[in-house]
Image (cartoon, rainbow, N blue to C red; front, top):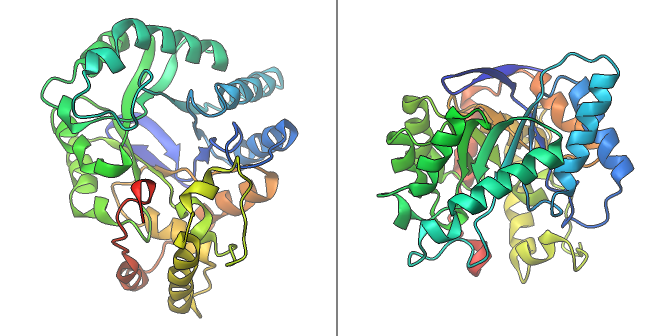
Length: 329
C-alpha cells in the first residue's frame, strides 16, 4: 500500500481508504460478519484510513469500526488507523436550502451532541476528523458552524475539521478552503464527473487541504459489473441513483471507457481508481468495501504502477456532463 500526505497535516494516509457506507446499510443485504472481515482484511493490507458517517445505518457503521479497532488493539496490533466521520445537518432539506440558517441546521447544541454520539459509537476519546456532511453556499460569508468546530478543535474533542461537498454545488467549498476554515474536503471525482479538476482540486493543493475522493467508481457503474437487466433491491440506494434510463446510459458510457483500456492491462475499476489517484491533490480515495474480495481488489490497486500520463489524458474524454442525477435525469 502506498501512502500520501493528507494536505499540510502531519499524517500520511493510505491512498486507498475504506468507504464504510455499505457496511452500515442502504446498499442491500449486508452481514456484520462480512463487514468485520472486510475491515480486518483492508487494515491487514495497509489501509489506514476509514471514512464513515452518523447516517450510515444510524451509527451502525461507526460501531462496527469501533469494534474492529478494539479487537485489533487487544490483539496487540500497533497500527494507527485514522477514522473520518461526519455529522449531518439537523432535520430539513438536503442539501440545506439557501434560506436556511446555519445556526438552525448546525447549532452548537446539536453539534456538541453529535460529537458525543460519534465518540460513543467509535469508542474514542477524540475524533480524528469530523466532517460536516453537506453545506450550502449561502453560509459561506458567515460560516458559524466552522467557528464552533475550530473552538472544539482547540479543546481537543476533534483533530481535523472537514466538509463533504453538496453534490449539486461542489464548488461552494472553495471559499471555505481559501478562508482557512477546513482541513479536508471530501469530493465526488471520477471519470464521469471531472469538474473538480477545473478549480477545486488545485485550490486544495494551494491551501494545503487534504482531499478525500468519494464515488470514484460512480456507485458501481465504473466497476463494469452492471448489465441492463440488473435490478437493485428497493432498500438499495442504487435503485434510486440508477432509476429510469440512467443505468443503461451509464453502462453505455462505461463500455466506451473499456475500449480505451484494451491492451493497457487495467480492468475498468482499476483504471477508475488509478485515474483519480493520478491527480496530485488527491490524498486518498475511498471506494466502498463490503467483503474480503472487495478489500483485496481495491487495496491491490495501490500496488499497481502509476497510470501513464498519456492514458490519464486520453481518459479525460469520458467527462460526462450529465447534470445532477439526484434531482432528475
